Image 1 (spheres, rainbow, N blue to C red):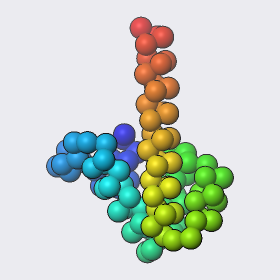
Image 2 (cartoon, helix red, strand yellow; image 1 turned 30 degrees about the vertical axis):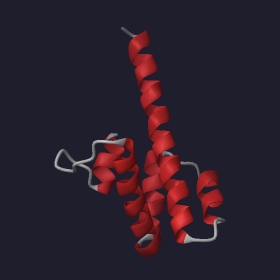
Image 3 (cartoon, one colour; image 1 turned 90 degrees about the vertical axis):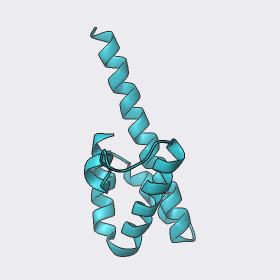
Image 4 (cartoon, rainbow, N blue to C red; image 1 turned 45 degrees about the horizontal axis):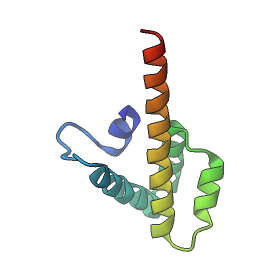
Length: 94
């Protein structure tokens, strides 16, 4: 997940070995951005290609924690979609 690695501080030194650990780490980052730097969060969502529709839906939720949870899941879902697409085309071209 190169975009995540670049934009939320994931590196080889970050000890994330499970999906749940990644989800928790990402959730904390999204929540921090919601509270402190909404513009940076919007830029991150744009770079990852999470639609404005999904952002608008999440913003209707009643708490920042629920918004962060929804956006975290959308980020992970989008990254997985991109991964699957790359794998599909890589296999077709080999």
